[in-house]
Image (spheres, rainbow, N blue to C red):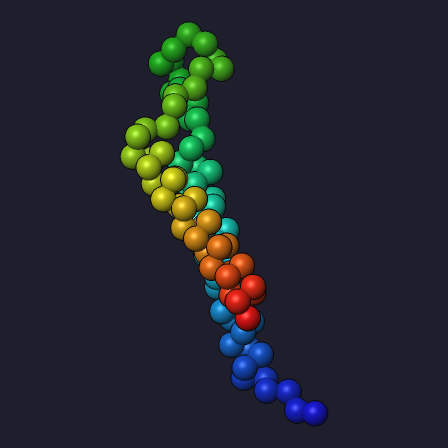
Length: 81
């Protein structure tokens, strides 16, 4: 039995890269949809928050859609094979 170490290294590298990329995209989505605290002195209430801007929400939805597409493609590869 012989192990193809180059192929194993390629699989490891691609898996690591895709995993970090999907987690990064999901993080962008979370940050884009999170509420931000008001700057100090902007409002009386210390617990007041600002809703995310429309551009941030749109970017977050694109990031979530890309994550969903990557997961769907992975499921397709598993099921079709």
